[in-house]
Amino acid sequence: MEGYIPGEQPIDQSVVKLNTNENPYPASDAVARALSKITVEDLRRYPAPIANKFRQVAADYHGVEIDNIIPTNGGDEFLRLTIATFVDQHQTLGIAEPGYSLYPVLAQAQGCQVTRVALQQDWNLDVDFASRLNDANANLMFIVNPHAPSGILTPVDRLAEIANEFCGVVVIDEAYVDFIEPGLAYNSVPLINEFDNVLILRTMSKGYSLAGLRFGYGIGPISLLEPMLYKTRDSYNTDTISQLLATAALLAVDDAAITWKNVIADRTKLKRKLAEMGLSCPDSQSNFLLATVPTDNDAANIYQCLKDQNILVRYFDLPHLQDKLRLSIGTPEQNQQLLDALGRILHKNH
Image 1 (tube, rainbow, N blue to C red):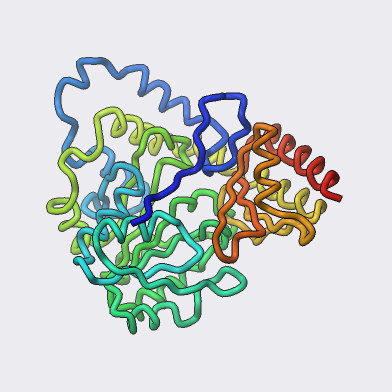
Image 2 (tube, rainbow, N blue to C red; image 1 turned 120 degrees about the vertical axis):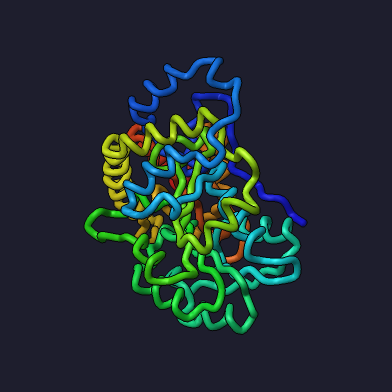
């Protein structure tokens, strides 16, 4: 099997890091206060087994019951849990491609098969996505929404159509949901009451600036979460520190929302500036842009030239992505450094 290759994590703090979609703004002061109160004595005992305090805060926030929430060690553990729970060896996971490259790695580790359905040219799901996965006898499907790496958003009514048609479990991976423009009024949570086969992934990594904490959670019907929570989940899968800080962050959601607003505004500005330079981007609802470089330029070369100038972005040497760079939204200063460097590189290439 091939392992997952993460984005580079340099030790040098001077590097402009726009390659792993971290929130460029710090977490809430409420998180800092909670962190300052943690003592060594707090670490002597095991953590709360299923993080009930966090679960209740998350349930209240989403308007569901505590039993509709499962805490996980990052969103990636939630993905692994769904495969371990609902897909036996030699059964099938369905995904759209291009997509999150960890999906097939998790499937391989579990010993199950993967059926890939290519996205349409506009990055939307194929109109026959669900039926094609039914034909492949898929037990589980992953939909990353907003999509990575394009940032395109699939509307809730389309998700409902897929859930209604698909014979297995539908996982909606909403790692980037906090960066959707508020005017779109996106909310998929009611789907867990409408359908008994829908699970939703949320994470504290992106919207709450806690990527280093490794804390995520799932939302879903009790019938799907119970076997995950009490059978396939690792014991004490979330630690004392992460539970306390994730709870503090979610209680201070209004503080986090300020960063979301800033990222959305910065995304709009960066997309416009890139277009002026000849780099086109889909209409992203995430905290990144997928930029297609001008036809007379090489994306891999631009990636390396940026890296040589201490600016990291993401290049995927994969079908449909070889002429593109994924650019995480940084602070206004970081975005300007990116634009200045791109300007120099493109000018030199001419």
